[in-house]
Length: 90
Image (cartoon, rainbow, N blue to C red; front, top):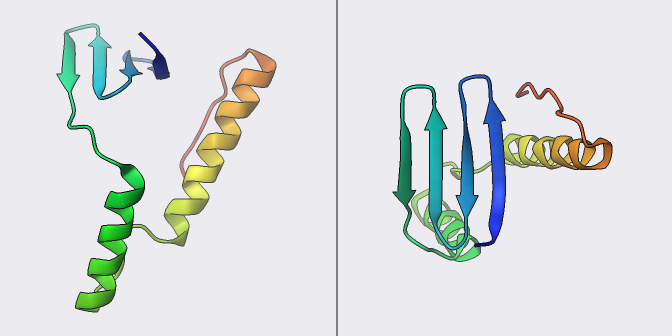
């Protein structure tokens, strides 16, 4: 199996495996969740076009992009230092 990501918190952890499996573990449960496999770029593009056509706001905005970049930077810092990095959302 190819581990895509792992998120560790104070109450448990989540491990994501490709192509669509999440393994959620906490002190009270352990569960494996199968997710539908979708092309994220296609899904985002369809949502954007739908927002344009309907005149409503896009589901993902600039703030979401900034938050995603901050998460990536924290993950990189953690990888570089081999230490956990505290992260607070903006």
